[in-house]
Length: 114
Length: 262
Image 1: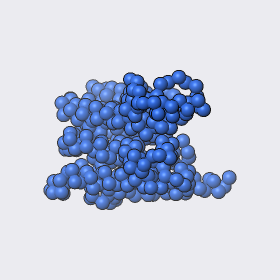
Image 2 (image 1 turned 120 degrees about the vertical axis):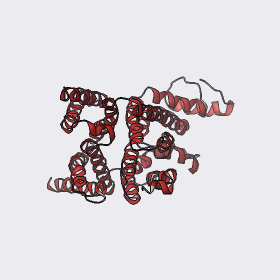
Image 3 (image 1 turned 60 degrees about the vertical axis):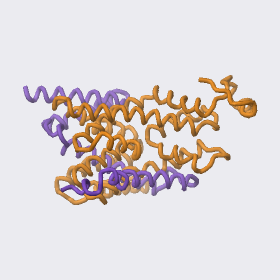
Image 4 (image 1 turned 180 degrees about the vertical axis):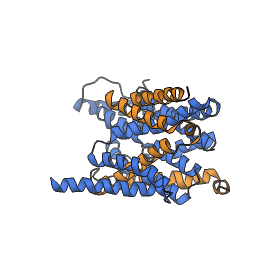
C-alpha cells in the first residue's frame, strides 16, 4: 500500500512539492542583494538542476508511463530525434519541435503497426 | 481601461514622465496595470507553450492516479512545470518522500537566482517586504523571461502589479492546459493519449536546449539524458538525485577544466 494514501495526498503535496520549491523563492527574497547570477556556486547548482531535468526527460521517453508505454521504443526515440532536429532547424522554435515530434510519434506508430 | 486616481498621483506621475520618455500615456491605477500584465501574457508565446506543457502535466496527473483538484493545486502551489512533472512521476511511481522532496527541490534551485535578479527591478524605496512575497511566489521561467524583456519600458511604480498580472495570466493558461490534459487523457484513444504524454518530454527537451546557452549547461543536459535512464535501469536507489549530482558535477568539472586550460 502506497503511503500517499496514509498521509493524505494534499499534505504530501505541501511537504514534498510546495515547501522544497518555495524555499528557493523565499531565500531569493531574503538574499536579493549581492548574489551574482554567474557565481561559481550558482553555475554548479544550475548544472545539477539541468541534469536532473534531463534525466526526467530521458526516463519519460525510455521508461514511459501509462499509454506512452504502448508506443514501440524505436518510434519514441525516433520521434524525439525528429522533434529535436526540427527545433534546431526552424529557428530554435519550441512549437516547431513539439509539432514535428508529435507528428513523428503518431505517424511512426501508425506505420509501425501497418 | 483608464482609471484616474486623484490629483496628487497625477502630479507625481507627470513629474516622473517629464524626466523620462515623452509618451503621453495617462496615469494608471494598480488594477489597470495588473490587467496590462495579463494582456501581455495573452500575447506572449509562453502562454501557448504553457498550455501545451500543462496539457502534458494534466495527462500525467491523470495517468499516475491523482485527482484534477490535486493537479490544479500543484500548479497553484508549486508553479514550476519541470518540478511538477518530477513530483507527479516520482510520487506516482512510489518513490520515497525524501527522494521526491530532494528531486523537486533540486529542480527548483534555478528559482533562487531568478528571484534575486527580478525583485530589485520591481521594488521602489517605498515597497514593503510583504509586497514582494507574491511576485516571488509567482516567479517561474515564463514570467521571469517576459518580465525582464518588458519591464524596462514600464515606469517603476507599477512593476509589481504588472508582474503579478503577467504571471497570473500565465497561470490561467497553465490551469486551462491542466484541465484539458486531465479530461482528454481519460477519454482519448490510446495513441492520442500517448501523444499527450509525449508533449512533456518533447517540449522540455526543446526549451531546456534553448535555455542551455553555456557549455556547462549543455554538458549537464547531455549527461543527464544518458545517466537518467541508465541509473534507473541499473536500479540505483535515488536514481534522479545521482543523475543530477554526478551529471551536474561532471559538467561543471569539465567546464572548469576548459576555463583553466584557456
